[in-house]
Length: 88
Figure 1 (cartoon, rainbow, N blue to C red):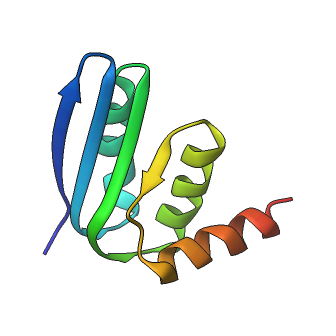
Figure 2 (cartoon, helix red, strand yellow; figure 1 turned 180 degrees about the vertical axis):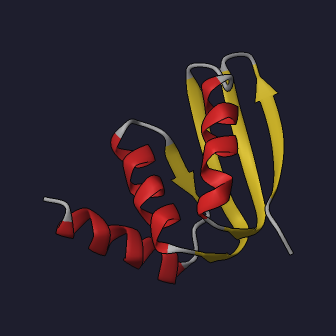
């Protein structure tokens, strides 16, 4: 299974629901979706089953830039925290 992105907008708020496996090759498309998402973007990872290191680093950067990452499974959340700690 590859990554599917479902977009839900309400005014200047956009939620991007990510479904499936997210790998490095999906980052550019996700950046484009974030770019047109408005002033407030949330990434919903409730249906993400697998990520790679580049994605984890990207998600950490997103959070640093004010993009909310929600419904993230524990292993991904822990991995993001470890990568953020390593980057300091």
